[in-house]
Length: 104
Image 1: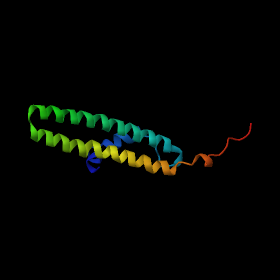
Image 2: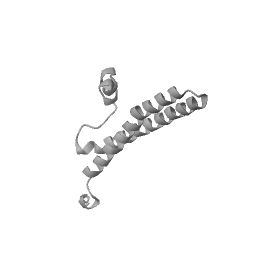
Image 3: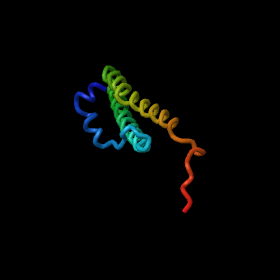
Image 4: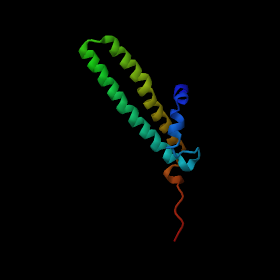
């Protein structure tokens, strides 16, 4: 996380995020977590594909590095996004709690 702050990634991504910490913007936060999860999943697939190519070539050190880096850089963030959405689900009102629209 510190590395991302140091290279400016968080500052760059903050401009594209609509979440400001209020309940009104929770749907935007949900959308952002899904987008981030998809990006990390695609990149994890690419990393694992490179590990498979390295395994076919017999470069076992490269396989170990790709598998380890893919886990740290993509699998963990994907799990983190899912955990955040599980926490968001607890904040959403139950269907019974949703107020009915005012009569016209």
